[in-house]
Length: 638
Image 1 (cartoon, rainbow, N blue to C red):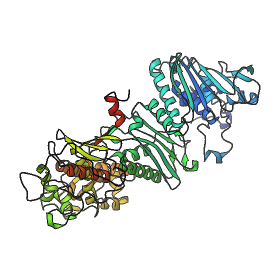
Image 2 (tube, one colour; image 1 turned 180 degrees about the vertical axis):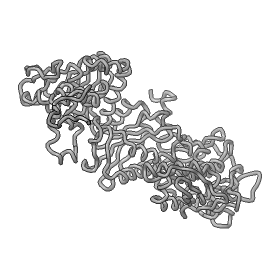
Image 3 (cartoon, one colour; image 1 turned 180 degrees about the horizontal axis):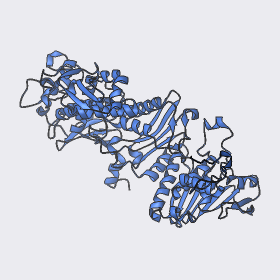
Image 4 (cartoon, rainbow, N blue to C red; image 1 turned 60 degrees about the vertical axis):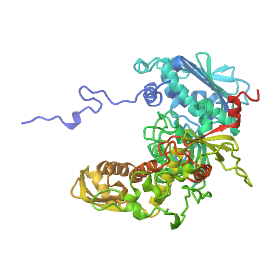
């Protein structure tokens, strides 16, 4: 017979063997746990304190740092201040003036709102909070004791505003302190936070000092373009203002504004990428994907774009309460936001710094640079869908009319030499002349001016209103040819071609399921893919230009994009890669002698084509040397 213990004899307050009883944690320990999420290092402390100052309406903030912020971090602002009776309450957990009820949380309009930062910071440091409201004669301060309890309220001399003085960070949590890096490294992180705030708020005066040395001292720039530009160059380096393109797009209640560096001046690291949502610096996968996709056709894959961009939208359309540090957000209409960012950036990059408004028809009908349809009399013709969309049966190769080499690109209007001619070109019939007068014009000179001469068989020299223009002839002609090939390719949609031997590949069942939900998308991309079993696919038709591509890699990457983003630009990218190669082979080679008419026709075509600022590989196609810069080189005007 088995014995059992009557239920009535079990002590409900007795813990299981080896277990601690459930109990409410002390407030100080709760704050220290919260600090683990909010206070990672001195930079995180600076971020929280700076955001509080901005929410308080500060016009100027001073940051004093010692030993990278580990020894001391003091933030002083001239904001509204905190009344004496609320100083101790400001240090209480979940105490905030920024939210009142749940409806406020659904449309947060401030940078901070959780009410966790100050008590969390105070629990792992020696914190003093001093503040004064403008209409009061003196300020008051509160010091937090070792147990996290605010001390007595004391009068203190202080100008209107608030100062938070944080000393000896992690002094009472040595396990956290040993994970901190050197003073130099920690200050580097902290300085980056300050720079992000300064970029987002040009109207803010800001000073940063480290170990008694002034690192940044920024006067308010307001909306003055010259001051804003100077502030950009102070924060991001000399030259950023010169090479940055201003962007301002608005649609469906969204606005995207800011600066994007021309692709020719991309960076080896993603160290100058600043994106703000309603003034809040964020790192978001959706945003990153949209930006990268917009740059895909003008940037080498190993390079990174640089930008300072601001997305403004109604607060109810974005959830900022998805991460304790508020560095991540969730958009309620993610696809709409993604497409808006992508299309706005793509349009701005297409225009570039020339202000092109579309290709149109080049005004100069000369030599081999006539871009409009000249008719059948001279042997040139527009590129047809048959040229690009039909491969020789069983070969998987493009037809001879658009094969590699410049001869195959007459149809696109890309080659200087005419069909049927051999040995010489019209460009060789006359050498560029020096000292030729600029053509007379009724209005202002065009953006790229008029050609003067050719240098070293590689560069075109031209004069415009600002000074000297230097053009890389091959790079410019390559971009023009590439853009026109893309236009011709896209005019009638993607033409697919069957594969004689289908390509089989194995994927996960989840990826194979995407064929059911995205079948129309794949068909529109020129892909016909069958599902043979749970995880086996057969590729039967592909875009004609991609018959020689790595189809297995392409399909895998495409399915991965569809799984994560619900869309993919892989096929377009692969087609563009092929067209880029064709344009490169068809572009003007080095040491080709061009006439002035041919050079001027090239300049006019550059002004009309999209993305003319850089070649297909992301390098610049032209540079401007102003008259002032030329005078400086020759010490004129001194």
